[in-house]
Length: 257
Image (tube, rainbow, N blue to C red; front, top):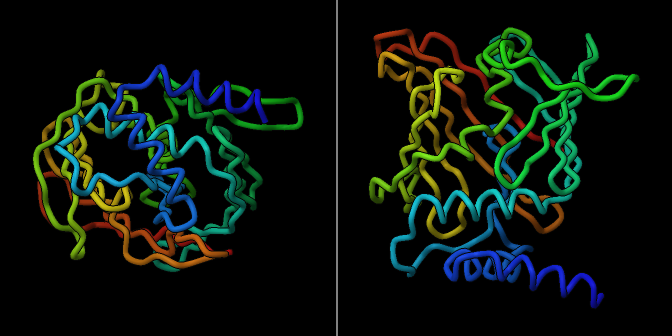
């Protein structure tokens, strides 16, 4: 127990005062936090720090705290991607900074490692793990609107970010952030995020292509309580026709016990 306390003290010393305060608040509220997984998506786990009543934090402080809290979760849930008549079941298991997505028919296991400065997506097989090919990150998962990049959380590490202000999403008061891609390796040139000020939950995300056109929107539709904690129940993913506001495809990410 003493060693754990010493390690925690060391971690806290490396944070800014604001980050330390936000993380301590998250730990006090761990049993009542509103848990969602982003896919960025997908997986949207607990983001339990409170920003309400605080001076406006910087985008860096918000994203640092989101990453820290996400990397501490322990969950094992069933889920599915659903688009029209296509249903893609998966299992989602997180053990701290390691997150596994397991698909069947055909079998495919992806492992996401959340690091301090970046995330890494790997393919898992009987022979071990190998890095997921960057050239395949923009590929769709089983024909849905969700791509492998959407599962990789790369945007949480983008260095150029700013707080645009406040805005309500589904009656929730949120901070609105803008993040810019560091290179053209991403399908998105920039992202807009709406983060609940009270719970720290990611409520909405909009991705814009390299022509500055809205390409995709992720939005939490509903949540559910499992064993005293709040989890994502359904997230809607809308894919837009290039250069138009018309939704050309709609996928739902749904989490079950």
